[in-house]
Image (cartoon, rainbow, N blue to C red; front, side, top):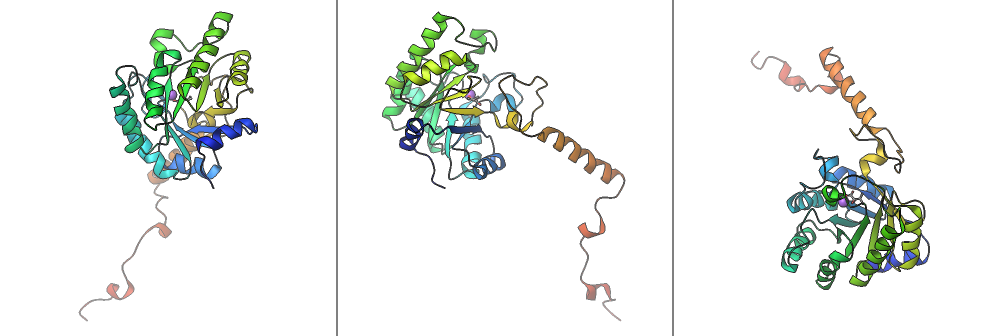
Length: 278
Ligand code: KIV
Ligand code: NA
């Protein structure tokens, strides 16, 4: 399989070929995602909620992102891997931004980074692009700003919000972003943005009008402790239940001494079972 690059990425939009993205956080999930044929794997800072058990993505660090990116890039060596820049790591000096982004590329072996925000992060996007670091942008609901936004609310509902989202998308394209994630916004504004820029939009909770779709691995597979399914997610498997029942059967069989069975045990060689001195 030929891994994606930025030229082919842009061509997929021109050719109207939908771009498939899924998150992954470790070696086996990345491997399975690559085998299943996704175009892009995102090492999302959603790993904070999904695999580290935090209440938001705010506590996630560059070290966390590097650690998980290393596992993912080992599992999916032929897939274009994008890694999130975590909370407040691209809002200070250009130096600080480039230090974090470089670690994600050099230690995490990602092919690109992703950053949340609009026109206000255009400088950070441009600095990375100038350093040879491709940037995927991310607007709409931006979970790292949850304490500013005050909740997971649908964006772009009124014309003022919609205009700001469109202006942000254009500013990010201008700054050199190669793609933009559109999260949790009305389908109307997602369609307007997608038609107004030449770089691909990747939607999550933004309807069917974007150039691609992204979902969280654990949401796609029902591998989650989250009791509230999200409206924009489709669950394609029930891995959580499969795991729970598999583990309870294991526990039961050990308690009943039906595992290990004779075929799982090892034995000494036949001649050693004879008396050594006879
Ligand atoms: O962290 C993440 O998983 C993301 C996607 C939901 C776009 O940013
Ligand atoms: Na993210």
